[in-house]
Image (cartoon, rainbow, N blue to C red; front, side, top):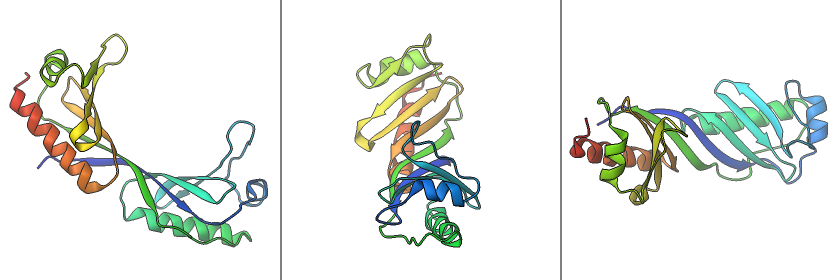
Length: 181
């Protein structure tokens, strides 16, 4: 089994029906809000290290979690922080994972041109003058891989740790079977 590292989990939840983002920005230190540039308010916490995008309709995007266990903790700390400054909020919907980004290493160097040809040009994009890696769309596992000559790669687009793990295992098996040194 290949060793993967979770780099980022993006998820969503709801903490209220209507949020006055201007009032929150004025009351809560460390927030950023400029509705002309972006319709959401940005807030961060350090433990677990996460960033929140809060929207007027009460929707929240949680970015930066490194573990699914961090998600409910982060959401609860967000609610506690807002409550501390007088805003009555609570988690009103399940936390839904939208994207997991994981990194890993094949342990071998990869000839990206040979890989692109072996995996099929309809599934791979390789333009070295535009990007130093190759992009592989793994339709069977609903994942996208960014692969570099060094053998290091990024897997993204998955929505569960199991899906991420399965996609990475299938990808590494496929690449190793191609013998692309």
